[in-house]
Length: 296
Image 1 (cartoon, one colour):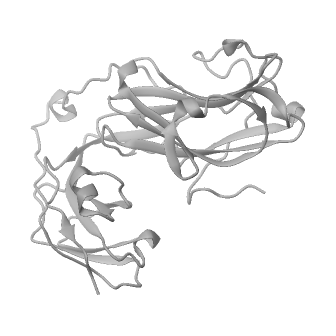
Image 2: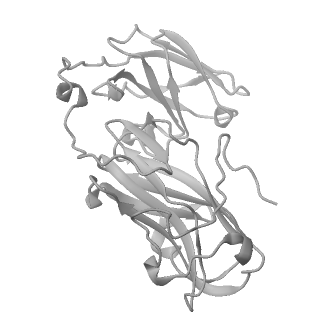
């Protein structure tokens, strides 16, 4: 009945107790949180990674999905909501747009946080924009109108830390997150990653691979962040990225493969270098110029 939504996912058995976390203690939101085995319902959250730091640029979106199953609770009247809050050491202003996908269109989360009859709701997608370093909490829940029943996913802690994003269920160590250069804080000489110059980008029409050639190796780079777009205007503004990939070598020639690149009539690419210093991701100051992918 339920689908695997992402290539690498984790599914959470959503039994909730009063000890879930210090932030969301028993009785919060005025609900009687029940065990799913009794209620006959499940809200599962899916994301690509857990406890693994991944590249993340402030202002980008963190995307994930949820799946809802219910039997005993079906048609129960109540309110559903996605809740995003700042945790210790983070900034409330670091939460930008919070949206959900409805009919293929991203909409403000207020349209999701509504009164409904609890029923199956498969493949619901969300995205959150983070604009500051810090730790943020995310949970998806449903509370019955009489507040006798409440079900929710376990708390997710989203850690944004100097160019990386980590998802965890464990309460992270409190930290005063700032925008200071991590390398300077650690007493390490500041490292500048060079700018990428794309010489050529070529793809066969029916293929899902793009062969990229750079003018030269990039100074101080461990690898590249490669973004593809359907429109040149989107590439210049870094909007509507079709495919975003991390290439982990400083090669002059390399290939990026993804099914979404297949059969595209027009493609544009831009690239920047990255280097990891003391677990912090440093990027080229500027992206490469937008390059048109030659489609044979």
